[in-house]
Length: 187
Image 1 (cartoon, rainbow, N blue to C red):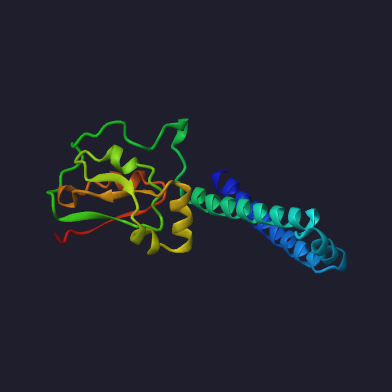
Image 2 (cartoon, rainbow, N blue to C red):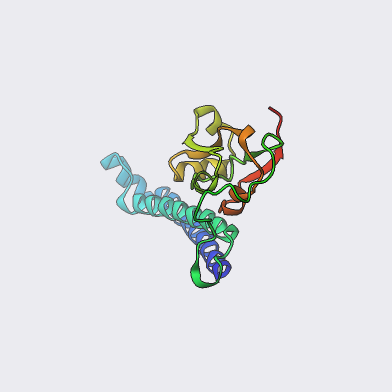
């Protein structure tokens, strides 16, 4: 059901983007008409009909892009277990973390992370933190990563103490964006 919902959101997003582009193009065509040019020459601004199509087109494209991106994000969220229980562990116990520290460390995919802080909540060794992206970090993101960062206030998860990771993989299991992976610790 979740996949059907995300697919529907993506389809609606695409339809809105196409409709928005059509409205903007229609407004552009209207601005070239003799009546619109005459109105613009007299009043000094584009006609209301042209501006409404430009604004409506831009709003539709933005709404469509948002639905498309969030629909794609929903498609990657694993379904909750039977009974509606949260897949996130309730406690931060170290009982399952039996590996020695400093063998591996988590790495955050900046283009996927949305700063949900689930990794911060489940890590018993306080490996993670949340902070705002710097301008340089934001500039290095893909257009999609920048859109996600903007939508979430520019906050993302960071590895604060990678050497403290015991490889229990709780962070990886709870990350809704699948933005974490374990790699050999390099110090």
